[in-house]
Image 1 (cartoon, helix red, strand yellow):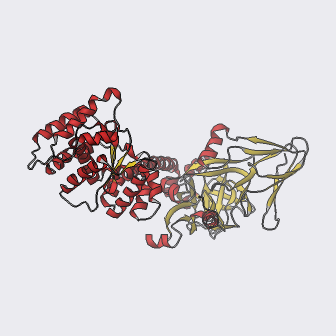
Image 2 (cartoon, chains in turn blue, purple):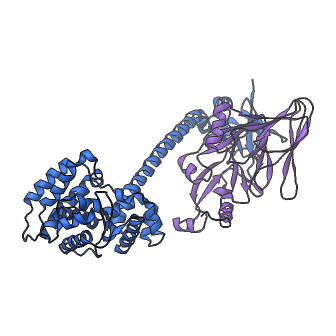
Image 3 (spheres, one colour):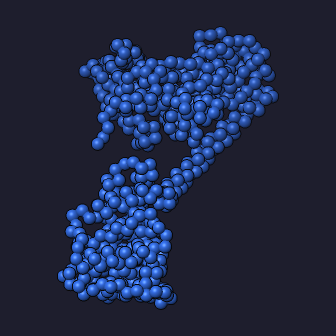
Length: 369
Length: 229
């Protein structure tokens, strides 16, 4: 008994696909193209191949019969199975293996897609992490000094906006004197002059900005018990500047697009810095703080100042904590542990040439009342 | 029962499709495609394929969540359908084979035409210009395509290869295999030529190609749009 199925056939020359009916008769597959004469292909002369974008077509051909049909395309599993039972040789193997091949292809397609998407997600995440984490570090390492100074100028202007600066009087003189003593003890030339500004404020804080800019709030001087204690804080901040910690923080906040703009030397730097958020709340990592403490103590010793004054100031602040944590401590983690560590380091840091600061501290604090 | 007949009506450079809908018949079309219709026809939205089908269509293929169904419940009627893009309209008769369709090319079809989602492999998803998901059109009946620019067809003989720029591709028959390759022999030439990746098709089967590149047009248009800020 003959069976019939719907199929598609293609001519040897470029032409559109044509629907056709196939009839499986004894010895031959009969192709009846729409609007064309029937063609008989002997089962023994068939060649088969699996194709199509989803490997879900079987293409049969028959070189033994000259006709205007070059390929018979089957997709109906019932038709493929029916032809397979009648075909011989390689064509039979292709037809019988069709379902297995199709499933293998679908499985490979799915596995490849999942693996590729997982790889894509991992790559994008890794690139994002590299760009966001390592990006600022790379930028800090390679950003030219001129750009750092520009960022510092913009950050200073942003921080001083609306603030009352103290430029004369005992307090301003004291800050200048401490700055001169400490910066003279810096071992390598940073490439810029330190510019320390004193701002009238109850805030007990000092902020290290890029390019040698430091802002000291008068609340810090009013709280300190001596000029050496202020020198301890300023030595700590100077070391943050020298390590480009402030620059690192500003860059982290600005994001990579701004970093690229800075690297290329263009863009609205003041606008960028304004977008960096609260610059007086730059929070450093524990390692950055520890390094600034350690090197600040060494800087004090080289400047002829007693390193223990740094610990004394932090102890004074800690004692004030019931009245609220001062800003300088709120951004500095593990205060108690740090004080112990500073005390320990200060005790082992020798001052080769002690030279106390000649500052009338009572006059300084009186001028701030 | 008599079924809907479609006819392309050339109106200057902006063709539309006239659908004649016999009593009791209906068609489905892209949401917003209806331009005019006779009063006896009814219009309603349908998800076609259920919520999952509609979600797949809108989220994966970037097409409309709802289709428009135009029915002639009482007496026969006529509707004019217009595509949202500037370009040609072509009717594709499905006769036992399937087609894969790029996003945004579907305009209207007989209800016997099924449009589902096909997932492409990673390389094709990333570089074919069609994304990870394309439409698989199967069944029987007429599918009305709209294109950006005019439409050309290429019939490939068995084993014949043909290269199409990915953004010019509209539809291809499922009997065709294709792969993504560089446009030129070298990577630098591929990208400096402005072609990048292309689709290399192997027959047998038919490819539909649009004569304008929507991505290139968007880039050209962008130069004339006012900048923000």
